[in-house]
Length: 280
Image (tube, rainbow, N blue to C red; front, top):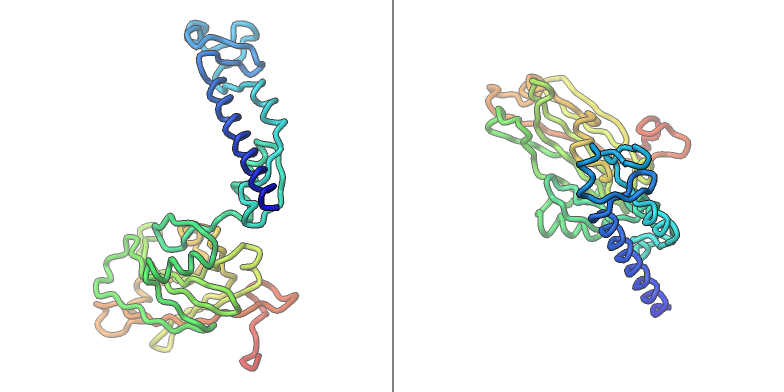
């Protein structure tokens, strides 16, 4: 079985190389117009970027012969070794692989471009980024910053929680919302968007007889950190309120963020009525 798989993978790799070679040849000195008429690259400028046969614009160059050849190839998904069973025509294959649920995940640490499956990324976060790893579904963290004026994309270290057999990333950072400096806390799920909807979480910050609460569904790490942040999908704390919660003379940021993660009950609204009893 392994021999057959290696042969198939080798053939598919050869086909992809052949397609790329054909594509490069078709974009060489002989350029086809959208209707397939060939034109010398030297003559292109002389005909004002229009095909002399059908007068079509030459801006979007296609090679119809190549397209017909490529359409005849049927290939396995590039992530078949990760479990994808899909088989696609060449051009559909490329589109599928960009969205394939078996494609690697990107490291959730801000600015890191490492990719891999979830077990690999967990080890990478622990060993390479020295991220704090916690077990349990509740959290109680204190964030301190002596210079609270630094709100231009200041990021605190990521914290990872392991519960329900899954991993969750707690983010807390400072940035500007328009011209107003704010702080934001949010949770991301290390897994697919579909699995993320099986969980919910709450985040709370407060002091001086005041409290802010956020409750929602964690976003998958398929959604970039910036996308989640810019959609304001989390607990946002205005600077004035953050300093009030910090107490003291307002010269140092001291926020205590508490929260919990739970598994949604069947037929409950996401992030809504599925909060379990303490005895669950």
